[in-house]
Figure (cartoon, rainbow, N blue to C red):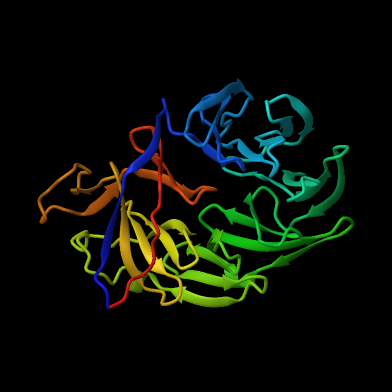
Length: 356
């Protein structure tokens, strides 16, 4: 068996910000849209984190409801879904269409989803029941409305799949539960299938070959791998096995755990973000942890019972890191929001498990 590997990642690009963004939308051209909790503006960046434009699109958080931003695959349209409305603008932020609805309750809300050909867009609004709508973009007409089972109990997140006629709808209900639906559609029909095998699982992403979908645990459950298109369980990595490594953090009072994030970074390897702020690497085929990414400037610190940093091994009760959020972008790079208020991009080397 090969030794546990520590892989250092130098910073490729970084951008200081006044505050960490509430949302980061990855664009098909490699750029980004940023929106913020306390500011109405949206910032568009290129792939090198250089500013392209900055505009007031009323994208701030209101009454604890985040504004969710989605861009169409052809980069022509931007959808903004906030507390009381869904809006579509062109790529420069000029308003094209708006749908007003009753206010979402605190911490609820919906993203939007564009079809691969930018022919349709889906979103959820809080009617008497939360309702999934399909919008035809050629004339901005709602052509389908599908009542869901809940009312003001869930947030709604959409995920593309390798099949352009299917997508995933995730419905987290706060700390209570998470449900995942597979939605199939054609020009004139739409069906929803609840994926009960994914209950209480947090959606990750698809492997680049499109054959496997990964989910992170809601609580203490395992990381799961599912086949596509069948969405059948093909493997699981329990957390006690993930963390069964020669670990320098075993002296914490509470052990490390998965922090809701597991993402493929190539066909053989997935990344697991932990509560201690670590980026562990696991092999898709053997389901074993073999290494850790060490992004430059992202430290993990020990804390004592009072929450103060400490280097005394006998006083350590917890650990915490500088990474606030992480994503894998269109170029296969690691995109991180940092505790300093910076947005950072790290190039990922060719990574796979080594055996001897």
